[in-house]
Length: 352
Ligand SMILES: [Zn+2]
Image (tube, rainbow, N blue to C red; front, side):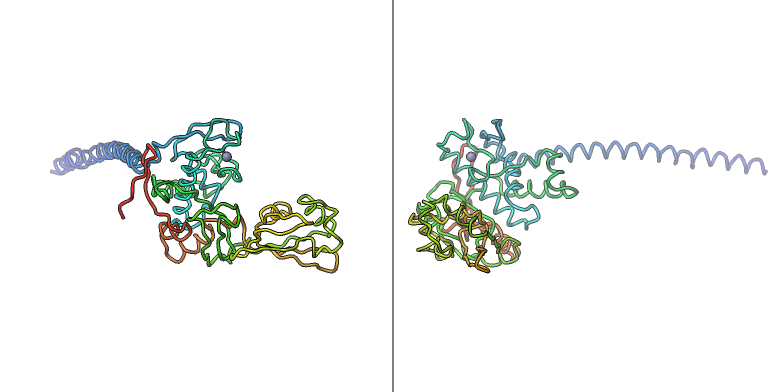
């Protein structure tokens, strides 16, 4: 009797417990296989979704001079790198989207209005910030790592998303992409393009730009001894004409409504504010000069950059207040509208 109970138990183990074990193992293998298959499907879906997301940008290609090399790139390959070079990746997403649209608009404007100074060879753009726009290849993991450190994956994804979320979107005026100028900090009000560069561009007019005071470089101070100050200004005029009083080296200052110096007279020569900024190595043309202890010239500067178009810290402030990227862009580019451009660079009016 005991034997038959024991045998029953053994049979039970073989019939019930072991098959459960085997079944479980088969199930695990099956689940693993399923997971691999699912992952593969998800990857394909992601890729398709990404391609779909970048349907416009992926088909817009042009040549970029990177260092001494000319590379053919598509907009979705190039733009994240421009974004990384031109705006802190830590900025709010709506500010980054505004920046993506502004940079895309500038790139297309540049393609339509090629540089004539021969700097690019046959490329449409270069990576010199003062000539075209800055660029860092963040799609290269090592470059991204050195730029963003531990946050590399998060920031690269964030910048690429700002580009794909605005795929093909540009600011247009009179049916064409605009010269979407931008700068870091306006100092509270942006400049008219005509006050800075001379030409009147109707969508680059002065607008208020509050909330920038938090920026580290909102105000800056530069100090020179009088001899150095004189030497720097002497690059703009006949140095002998500067006179003896350092506080009178710069005269007849004409300022814009935003505060930047439009022009001034230096040693009898009329110079632009931008030339003064360059000669004195200042963050902007919005500055005042004072004499300290009869020996030091202290220059107090407000803002950072040329002050025309979108202020990046202003865009950040608007985004933090809840503005979307379209609201930010239409605020800074007066009269321009958000639109989409297809792979043939034909503007498609966006349905609002
Ligand atoms: Zn260039």
